[in-house]
Length: 79
Image (cartoon, rainbow, N blue to C red; front, side, top):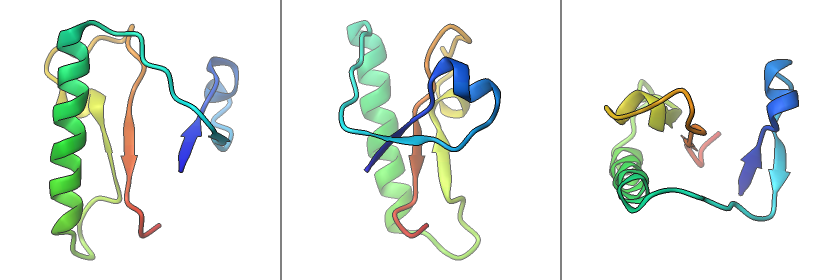
């Protein structure tokens, strides 16, 4: 499933809504960073324990992160 926050609703910390499509407008380097992040998240989720994080943020993992970017969050399927 995909979930989204709009810029307006995110500020109010409302619950995300389900999306039917995700569009990424990014440089090749940014897309590679996102792809690497997704693979690393998949690897982490394969070896989860009860003490493992239930989600991961791209902003926490990508050293070239900028506040101008949209965050990508991977959530455990066990939630």
